[in-house]
Image (cartoon, rainbow, N blue to C red; front, side, top):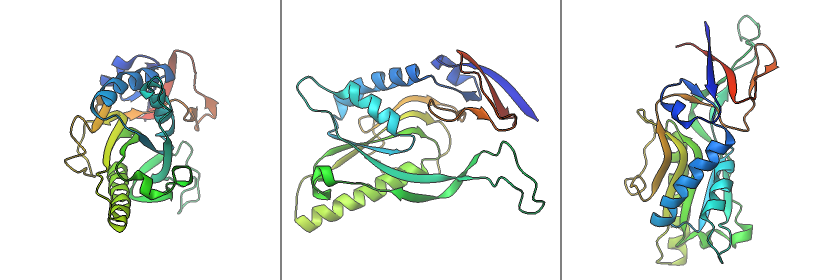
Length: 236
C-alpha cells in the first residue's frame, strides 16, 4: 500500500509531524545560518571536512556564514563514505523488475574517497587544527563514527611520527539529528554541545534534501516542484 503525503517545501515546523519532509534550499540556508552562530562561539573551525555527497552543500553554505571580515575562507576537504546499498532492479528469483526500488541502509561503511591534502601541504597540516566534520543527517551514526575514528587515527599517527605536541580537535555539524537509537557511537569529547551541533533534532522520519532526484520511479513522472509537493512513500 502506498500513502501520498502533501508537504510544504519551506515549513521547518513540519518536521515534527510529517513522516517525510522536503526541506527547501532556503530552509537549509537558514539552518546553517542559525548553527553558524554557535559554531563560531564555541568551536571556531579552521578546516571543514564534508562527507560526500550529503555534506557538500551544507559545508559550502555554512562556510559563507562562518567567514569573518579580513579572514580567508575556511578550506573544505571531502571524504566519500557509503552506507547505502541499492536494491536490485530485478528480483533475483523471478527476474521481475522492482520499480520504485529505494536505497536501503547497509551495515558496512565503504570508503570511496579520502582526503586530498595537496593544497594543505600534507596530513601534518591537520595536526593542531580545529576540524569540523559536516554531513546532512545523523541517522544511525555509523558513518559519523567511522569518519571520526579514521580521521583521529590518521592525524594521531602523523602527530606521533613527527613528535608534535599540538592537540587536534574534531567537531560535527549536521542539519538534522534523528532522535532514535544509534548503531554507531561517538567519543564523549565529540558529543559535547561545543563539539556536536545539530541544527534540528527530529523524529525517525524520511528526509529528502534539495538537489536529490525527486522523481517517482513507479510513474516516471517528476514530482511537483511548487511550494506544495506530492510525495509517494511506503506506508508503515
